[in-house]
Image 1 (tube, rainbow, N blue to C red):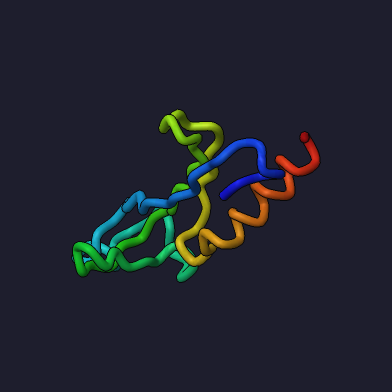
Image 2 (cartoon, helix red, strand yellow; image 1 turned 135 degrees about the horizontal axis):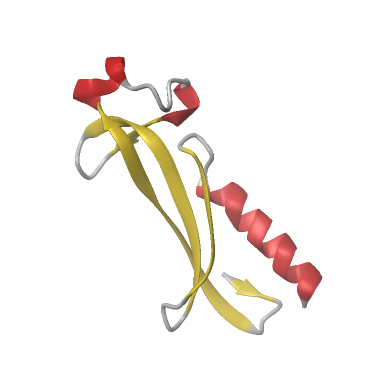
Length: 88
């Protein structure tokens, strides 16, 4: 993602499982369905969060947010773009 053609950023997200599928019935921290997600690379369901991280080309973290799993990275892409557009 390039913001105003000045700096290149990379936006990525990764899951932070709090409870695996085998213990989902006993999970007390996150019980709402918005916190239930699927990790395709491991082929498993979990309850937890997703961290959305903005880094520069050098790999240095600029900013991050944690959110329920159902919120997609595209929404955070628009959020970061609007924040940094106002700053620059």
